[in-house]
Image (cartoon, rainbow, N blue to C red; front, side, top):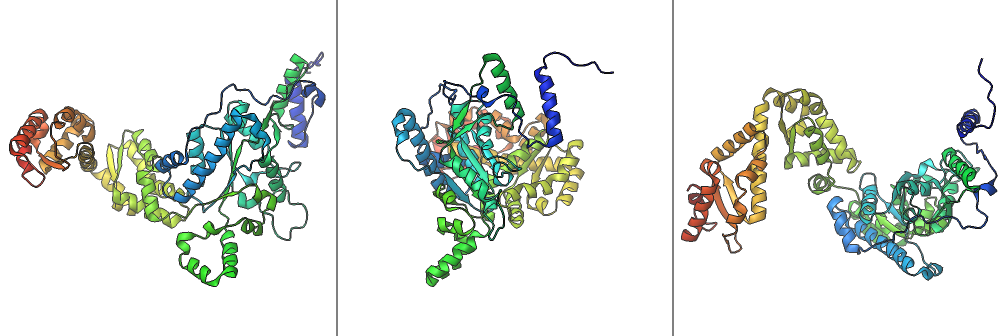
Length: 531
């Protein structure tokens, strides 16, 4: 028989009792452990700021655009519009920090609505901006929220999530970015009977946040937060009320808005038949979204007050095969870097040929999911390679168009002859080494077949790559080649097996022959390389 509990209950005892009640009656039941007057202070104002750091923002629109260009391919108009809106917003925040009297002046916050199909980089754009300027960032789907008092998330939780992302720094959270995706899913349905708690109700809840309001960091139905307040009240007699003001939080919403194009087309047809016909002939290029107005959003089921708080409209266009190819090849956030790391974990090197990248882009375009299709295609193409190769003797392979077209056949070839594929992989590294050398010194190195084969074999024997081997063999060339002035022309030197075996002597011969015979690109560079 269990011992009867006597004495004053501990916090753990209370917690277990309340958890039992919530399991019995549901998580939506709110339980107050002490009077509200205990939580709120009598005299001291709410704690709004917990950081002594000064907000800093020193970017110009071109700075933000240049940073986005490194990660996001295309979407030029969207990047410009976002860069301008972000700079305007945070310059105003900075000005208010310097002169608090500006808070009393009228200011329309440049909240943003992003339009575009899935996979074009909407979320990536905003996340990249937040990383650059160093503010907390919260992303959520609008569909998980409902009007306060109904089952579902409370929109004020977005602000509390910002506090979490800011490690409890209330001031930093008050400068953050809240990004809501799938906002088109909360448009009010036409002819709805009854209360629309996940449509109009959520719009009204967000409207309050976007204007300016104070959000209590401790949610009434957050058991852990209430316990923290209870402990603080027991210790100090009162629990401080921590709040975040939303006046400087940037709100950005986005969605695919599938029905929006038809609304715009209908409006343009009424406005001008000739103009609309011209737009229709270029539908693939314009995607119609660049002509959107606030009234078009209202026609789609949004409240005028809600759309009025989102004055900046930014449209992202669909990605073509060329765009997807450039995402793979040039973006600093390219998904192929992830696959290179994945195979490297097993001691396997993977190289993507240009024709392989383009084949992947072509397959991804068929998925109709934008850049997300790239990972779908890569996973489908390389799944068996990830499964089979870690237990094989394969140390490297090349992804080309034939592999993308028939992965199973290509995998079997790699397993049957791993050494051949290793040499093929290394030969590509030789070409990459020559390209990097030319880009840096404006001197073209042409490897003959024997030199290329010898370099690859040395790389295999030493367990390295031709690029790393070249960096070691030609480490003294940077200083020596500075003595050669091609007078703006790209000089060409032929690399033989003898050059690889004695690179120092070859360098001396090249420099001597250049000054004695003035070798030019149209001359006989092979003679210097053979010296």
